[in-house]
Amino acid sequence: MIPLLILGLLIQNPGAHGYELLSLMEKRHYKYIVNFTKGSFYYNLQQLEEKGWIEETHEGRPNNGREIHTFKVTSSGIEEFDKLMAKYGTKSEYVNLPVYGALLFADVYDKNKLLELIQSQIDQTEARIALLDEYLATLKELPGEIDYFGRMNENSRSHHLVNLKWFKELKADIEEGSD
Image (tube, rainbow, N blue to C red; front, side, top):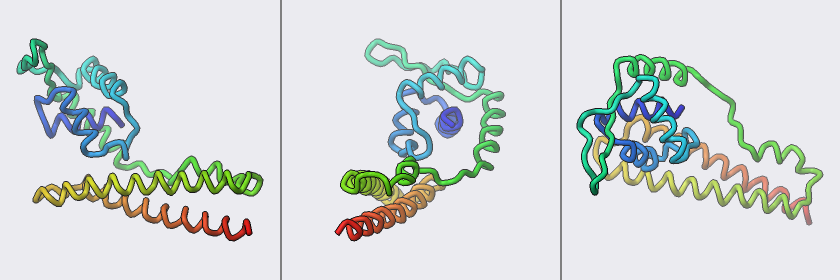
């Protein structure tokens, strides 16, 4: 998935350098789409260049005496982008939260520890909603910026709200059963 994100960002921003692309991924909260680190990002950037799907442009700009490497997508990179769009655009998966595995054994787990686990899920979900709210608020400040990614984040927020409600109800049910 990271190659798709890098290729797509370079198509949108030809001549960008790696740090610009990574900053865009972080700013746009692409971590909701794929888990990535700085290292995995730069590894994928290097792999795309080695495969000939991107190439360094000759517009490298000096930065404090260091050359900044800028990139653009090649024609074979456009073909790979099309393949990746078809691959990921047609994929659909089940909602799979790791907590579901833990909840399979809730009936044999210490109730107080279970309540702590669920509270942790509530806290994490509230934090995700807050991040999405922050991001969506910045989109509203920029006219014409609510695009497909903005809509995806609105959808993600809706899913998190449903999960939050479910976790809170689950916690209340467990607390009632503990009395």
